[in-house]
Length: 272
Image: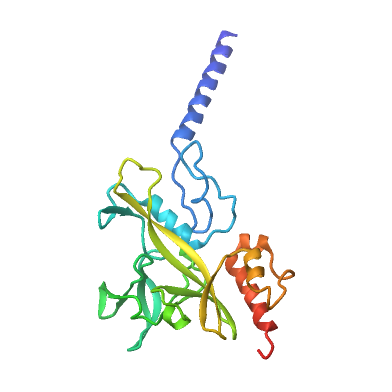
């Protein structure tokens, strides 16, 4: 009987040790760019809980992932700040096409800097070191799809002046219609690193997303919030969108929701 009790206690002790080791020695896991796991709240074990908001822009998720993967000492110097993360959309070196006033380049590689809006490109003449095009010197460029990075389709960017904007930014074309079109703008700012407040000079690249639309009648680029109420209010004088717009759909995927709405608006325009 004593041997049985001793064996039982030993089994409990070993089970407890295994449970502690399983918690303390968690192996890192690979997260997909659109899993949402990088944007939730920290768990008691230091990991990130799933994001209850559902869909998140793949570029934002990729930016968060790069921030979390930045090791100590791996930073860029910008003025007085040490900046972690990446200012490049989906990282660097993407297969792309680029168009300028002087030339057209197909199947080259580009890196889109969302902090200063420069476009770096590689070609057969400069395969190792990129050449830099300042904002406005590239009319448009298209980053090819790459499912491993969460780029499900080609991303076409147009410089703002071609859309009636005076801002020195590139805008991703979400939907192009005969009258109404919708675009997305990426912009990186320097934000505080919430997990390291002791180093006042430490910053991180925070990627922000805004949506805009154009009306060919006035050639004006106008910002619009990705919510059902904002869209219905914006077009209340031209069309009743109450049966088309759904706030849950905008929360689930604003890109697809804008495509649905602007496709409807273009079909509803007389003469188009």
